[in-house]
Image 1 (cartoon, rainbow, N blue to C red):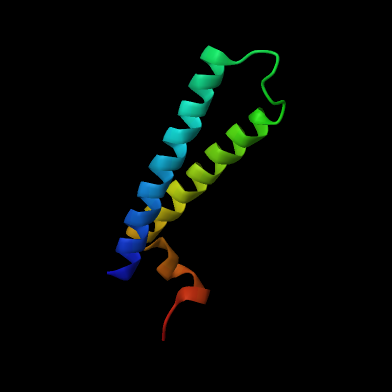
Image 2 (cartoon, one colour):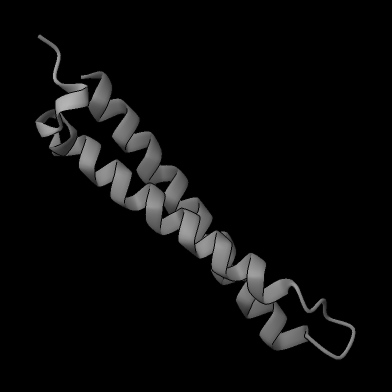
Length: 75
């Protein structure tokens, strides 16, 4: 049960992370100019990557894929 709750939390965080990365991209596309930071692309990619990682971990926790890994096998 705790794994499912952690999975749902990860999925919610992933949706929030991907949504904020999209909002940043959209805002930059509309209002970006020569004063826009050159490091903005790095923050967009890292935000999207963290969102994708959280999405996959959350999905894995919900379907109990980590139970098959030996490190998490409680005996």
